Image 1 (cartoon, rainbow, N blue to C red):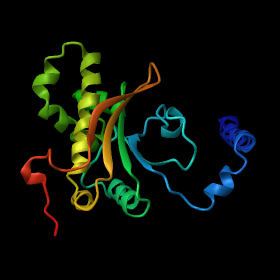
Image 2 (image 1 turned 30 degrees about the horizontal axis):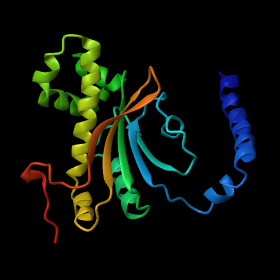
Image 3 (image 1 turned 180 degrees about the horizontal axis):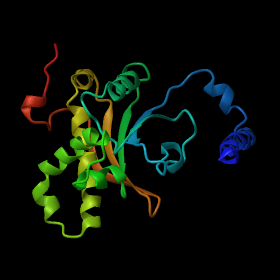
Image 4 (image 1 turned 45 degrees about the vertical axis):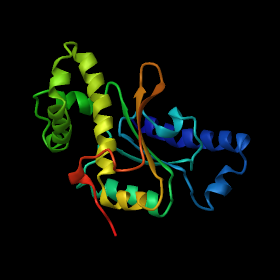
Length: 212
């Protein structure tokens, strides 16, 4: 176990040398500050690293990750990240990215109890309940799980659009755009769900704020 820990430090040294050979100015440029055009809200799953799967350099993507890429209105960690990204970093695009084979999605589809995690999974179960007719019509469990991954991303895009401070920004600017993607772990491909919004016009009236 100790050797595995040391491998991380050695890996860092190898990575630094490799980066310096390819882009000698990268670290000095990063030290000057960050101005990423993208905010990535993704799953905490270790197989879905935002920079790697998009072939992006460090400093390109501001990242927030949690189990099943959820946008929960009482999650002040996430809300603080989003607010900072929009107000301070002025990101232009927010990507909510789920992935097939998501353990959080699979756990929420079951009736097993996972202790403390059940409180978080409740939000995914609520998504399932909203789309129960469609999901229950899918007999194959794997296909049903994949569809719930996609639906969950769509619902989290909507949840982000419901935030009052984001709607206030939209009243002054078309940005940020919010996109819904899914990562296919088996193929390595990112799938654009064609869910892109930059206003609250699609939301039910009860969720819209009219800021002065």
